[in-house]
Image (tube, rainbow, N blue to C red; front, side, top):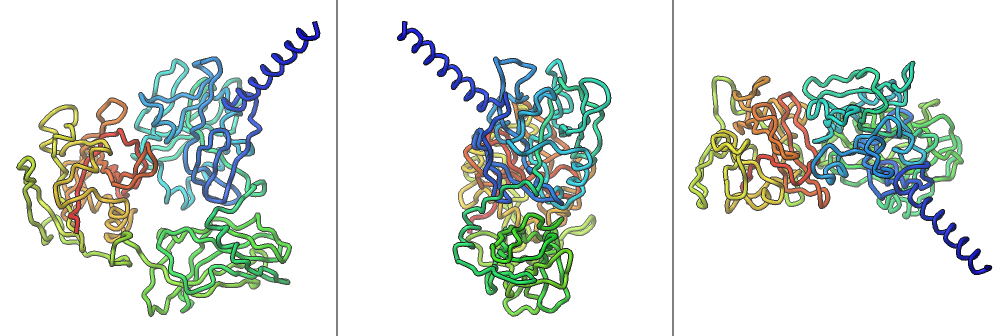
Amino acid sequence: MPFVFALVAFLLSACTSYYEEFEDEYGYGKSSKGYEFNGTTLTDLRDEHTYNVVKVGNLYWMLDNVAYKFYRNHDEEDKADCPRPSERTCVETGFLYPGTKLDYVCPNGWRLPSYEEWEEFYNSSAFRNYSLVNDVYKGYMSGDRSLNKDGEAAYFWTNDEEDGNHYRKCVSFTPESGSFQIAGPCHEQWKLAVRCVLDADEANVVPSSSEQNAVEKDFDCSVTDGVKVVYPEGGETFALGEVVSVVFGSDLKGGFGIELRSSDGLKKVDLLDGNVASAVTDGKTCNVYDVVLDASYGVWTTEATSADKPFINVYSYLNPSKMDRTGSFDIKFFESESSENTETVLIDPCKTGTEDSCLYDSFTDERDGQTYKMVLVGKTLWMAENLRYEKTGGCYGENASMCDEYGSLYSWKNAVTSCPTGWRLPTKEDFESLMSSIGGIDVAGAKLMAQEGWKNGNGTDEYGLTMLPGGLFDGGAFSFAGERAYFWTSTEYNSSVAYSMALLGEENAYLNLSDKNSGFSVRCVFDR
């Protein structure tokens, strides 16, 4: 008998342990597993998934949709859902979640934002600079599991409950019009995407490895009645768009502002949407805070002898006269790792509605005899037509005439090997360089779009690239021919997704993360 009781006790303890593990892994019974957070990157310890994060006001925002998978007994109503044939796509771009289980979606300590907080985020530069990536426009799944507004809009839960039972306020974002609005009360049985927020006062920020390297210099941050900035030290060279760790100490209360100023006193750029409210202000601790040298903020590049060399200034929000600054440094535009041209040079347009002075030529692909027009943009030679190499690509709608008009669509794996000899697939940096040199991502879309062929409004094609809306192949379906253009880059993000460039028929262009199985167009650049 003692043996029987011992066996029963053992089995009960084993079952209990398994059930607790099950709850943690799948989200039921709020997981006690926490997160690792360095101020710009969040790792959810439930599944080790990593999210980009930005601070807006007094909140840290996920810049990616939640991709935590949970279910219980395979209950279709209560599980996280992926409206795509391949679940791998949703691991990268987020699942849709039922309103009945929202307590289990965010990492422990994070929460759903309110509608007002969504509105503040939408109006921030952080939202504008980090556009919603490809395939987050999954719409929403209604109670009968039918998918609505797929490819047209992104729907997100808020933490605002509506009057009456079983409804919650939700928001939608429509890329075509750029509109953001209350989507109406959404029933809790519907499934929508989720972004989570963390109150800055509750943030447990652990420095990243790059930040730790800055701190490992053993800086002395001791200061009395003021602010002391110890990093950057001055003399460094940073890239436009680079994340820079600012290290400072203070004994002042009330938060801190961080700004970029020029040595000649003529330029000043705020590097934060809000202020640093979570600093340790004991007069000796080194605080590490990441800022982005983002061109859309007004950050500028410098010449070696420039009088407008920048420095970073940290000041007390309550007493702005209490401040300290870094030494001056340089900001360069790095076209790519191998590029000799390290600065942004704006290229004059060569084409209007009536005149075309662009530098064109043509070449023939020896593999299949296809002839392509090419155009010189700055110092880079681009194909001025989409690649039509059908051995590794396919035609939109399996219609050969679409290949003649728009070129072939390629998976990422095929795209990286499909350019003719002497040519290559552009990198993410190639597209960034192109867009920066023609005025920036906010205006590049219209300047790259062809002067005809776009259903919802043509572009100006100011550089002769004549980009056409070839659409895409995704999730077993062809979409957006005549409306949107998607182009692969050779730059991987991880084993499942890679960077792409998108033109959505509007002024902006976009750099996105896309499932490698998607079918996109290809433009090649001459490999010098």
